[in-house]
Length: 192
Image 1 (cartoon, helix red, strand yellow):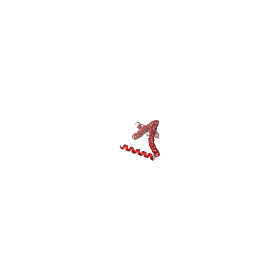
Image 2: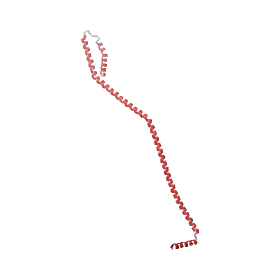
Image 3: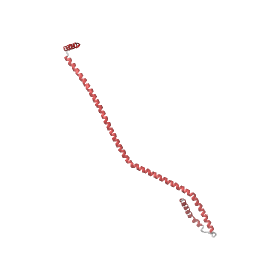
Image 4: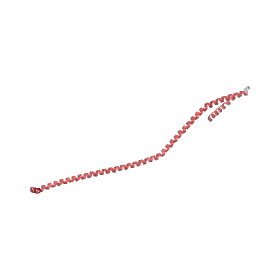
């Protein structure tokens, strides 16, 4: 309503600005003009002004109202967009503020993971070294047993060779006969 009244007021100002030149033209009035003619002129002027004012209010009011509503909607939309942008800005600032903390947290986590991985690798290396040592001890023990067996076999072979050599030297035909006789006697004694 206020907008419509301001539009009508503007129209009247324009009309008043254009009225003095029209009245000045009529300023050279003739002697035949009477008060009634002046009344009809002013009445005609008021009717024309009324019709123009009616048309401005009837058609201009909705136009200006629609235009004002569009402007208000755009202002509201701009305010919502500004508020959304402010919200995004606040979120981004919060993320940026938390970014350093997040980076520090990630570094600490990476350090813990690296330490855990180093400990795991050390434990695996110790376990592997223990396994290798056990395998080596088992191989050494096996080699030792094999060496003992080989040494015993060598000692037995050498003892046999030495005994053979000794027997060949000491066993003559005469000792061979004596041994045979002793054998037969023992056989005879055991048969009884």
